[in-house]
Length: 369
Image 1 (cartoon, rainbow, N blue to C red):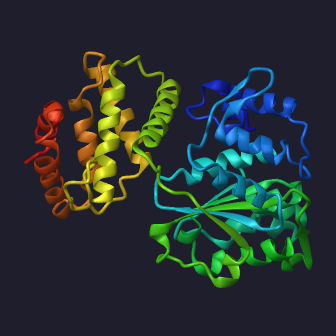
Image 2 (cartoon, rainbow, N blue to C red):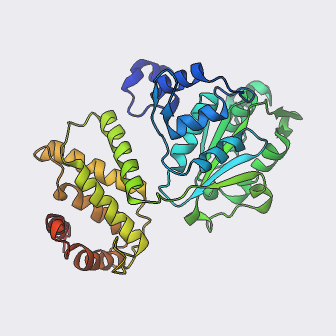
Image 3 (cartoon, rainbow, N blue to C red):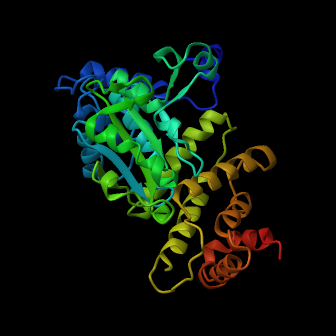
């Protein structure tokens, strides 16, 4: 941990998973008597319990980090105990990054060995770079190398993470092939290599919507076991997910207490689910769908923003007016097509609901037209 992080301690805006949930991880480690793969902090069973939640024999409650099918988590965890890497695939907002971070935290106690994929990610971000002052002064040497996150994970037997793999250029993606198949990272400048220590593995995430950006080569895809994270199956499950994450974010941001959040939260989730499905909750009215994904993550942002409005500029009660502008911003990505979709939704799905009239008026007032 760096000097800056040490100086602020718990005052950091967002703690890493291994720090935020250190007590839960310690309790699991103390109660865990099952076999652990090499260099794992917990057994696969305990890692799954950390992700899905549960109660330990001593009464310690482990909060769920992922709400979804148990089998998905079990397959993801067991993949990391094999020689295959893990690819978490799904539409935006299905908690891929969240699951990736918590898996790494539970398996090896370090979720920070991260490569953030972008269109400009260079090969050095995955492999290694150079300290050019030392390189010019003394020539190529191990001391002049700057190890990337994957290289550090290999040498220490930890889990590395690659976010948004399909956004990385194809030739840079393929630098992972030798690492994942041979468990070695060649260093041709030194006529040397870095071999992976037992315990090393890699978790990558990718969006379904990004498959056309930089499609994975068949050679690279074979090195991964792909686990698809679905959208929440039911409205109740999505409400629970949004509620938990909003509570965590509100606590971290130290937002003043706000009453009446559950009703508006459920409305936000209902709006998102209906527009995603192109069908009202009762199945009677077909709807046009907007261009955006309307993910669970966006619903969390809308509700969190509404809580901040209610706390700082309202009467301390979350009301429709506090979430209306956020919903409008989430739905209307294309100012022409999405605006028509949104207005039609208000008139055909929202206006007929007698108990949604305050929401209808608030959304109409938030529309600049």
